[in-house]
Length: 168
Length: 271
Image 1 (tube, each protein chain N blue to C red):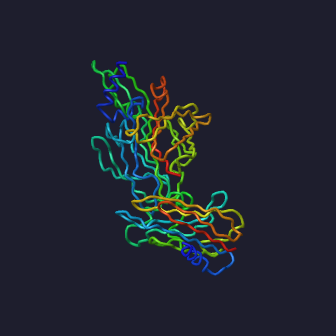
Image 2 (cartoon, rainbow over the protein chains, first blue to last red):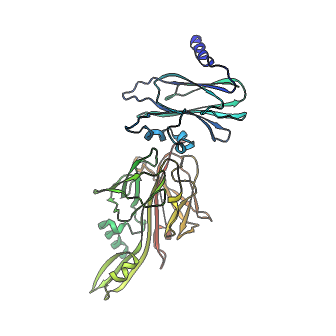
Image 3 (cartoon, rainbow over the protein chains, first blue to last red):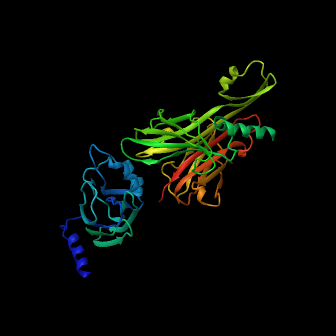
């Protein structure tokens, strides 16, 4: 157990400690179901008023010339209502294909396309997953931008543990 | 009472006329879209149209689609693809090729009533203009009641917009304060009601969730519009909801006035 935790810590900490660095580890659980499709996932940051200040990532079925995977994006209900429906998709550097069950580590540098400069203050990391012929789940982690720290929260169905690490 | 019974018998025989009769009858008229919140560049919404008791089960009559009017996000009319009518429901597809909100409505403004000709009572319905020439010169006891009825629903491709939601100024209309495709269970939704374009205070609005077949109680909320004509809708659980109102308390047309009715289907999503 300790070994696993240590590994997780190392994988996130492996990113170079640049100014305004933010790393997120998302666990997509393995599910035993008759019909499995990888989940659509959206990661974004909201300010204290609930406004979306950064769309970090959104994973969905991007297929060119075939059935358009954007059809199921509204199933990420909260993300769709807060910002998804107003975006021109796919968003460069944000949109990407769906990912398999397992741990996925994403790193963002402040001032990049996905993570614009944020004023110090209170924010919330939102992670939403929705699966075709499956459920939907939203995990949120409140955090303070400007202070180093690591926080985790866990989903119970569509998402495993989500860990946020900040290095100001 | 006799007239009322006759009317309801006519209503049963001719769904087209049922459309023009105030919602005093138990039957509800609704347009049920396959989805209300959609994405992508092009989509299609399929709509069930029925005159029914259940929400949302087609258990009585197919809805006639003569008065179907679909307004696109740019305010222009959108042509539906009519699939047809079965015994219990009509079905049509609406192509969504422009980003924004669409208003799908059955709107009729006309007159309804009867006259005597050669000792026989004849029924009549149509536009007020057509009534001038359509009723024979020798007709006596001409009794015509103006009617304005609207049954509608809303769907949005991409981000919601408001151009299609502009009122026409005729009959009872609902002008959303809360956007009809941005409704979430647990959040109060506000809708302003107008009569002939002016705010309608004191209107009794019935608000009820679908799924009536699987519960014992009707669970209908009666909401009265405030001084500004605004009704506040509280949907505790996500789902499709039916909303209905009329002037004259839903029973009788106001004396000498227009009989007006309004019904809408709204979807409240989980928060």
